[in-house]
Image (cartoon, helix red, strand yellow):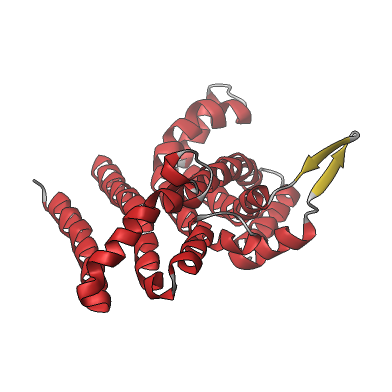
Length: 266
């Protein structure tokens, strides 16, 4: 087992042990009862439904929101990043200003803006579309993440040596062909660590969507506390913290491994 794997393993079990120690400290002899409550409510916290009868709420909502927001941000971010490396100075300047505006926007403020600025019903060609809190959360989180992806795209493009552009131009390739066939295949592996880090950050940021009224894990956690009593509030929030850790820690570990692999390949 490599030193990095050993460190990651100890880090993982160390955090789990620390959370369990906090639970034991807080509840003492009542730890067993607290664990029973968490076990009984685990389906509700994970899926938003009893007995795992459905998905789309609880922790699964956080995962789905993060995936959908990342997908939207990837598409928008690549277009914005492309504009940021445009040979047209006007296009490049506008794109950079827009990127900085999105990147500097507090996520919580953006979510509140989506909540109050986006109507719940939108009429398109006579068809009424319901804009749910879930959809508002997805759109709201995709805005700031778009900026991070655009910047990762630009940095990836700039990391490819200029000689690649010059050689391709000498062979008669147009700019679009150079970007698509030569630059992007080399730049994408360089972008991956930043993209993975951005997704991990986005996933953790889904804890903010509770302000939109989405039935995420924090919203369900409040329901559980209201039902079972404030005595179990600490246990519920420790459980939620554990869920986020179990999802985010492997992403962070894989990102570091990928960065080491890319460094060795240079």
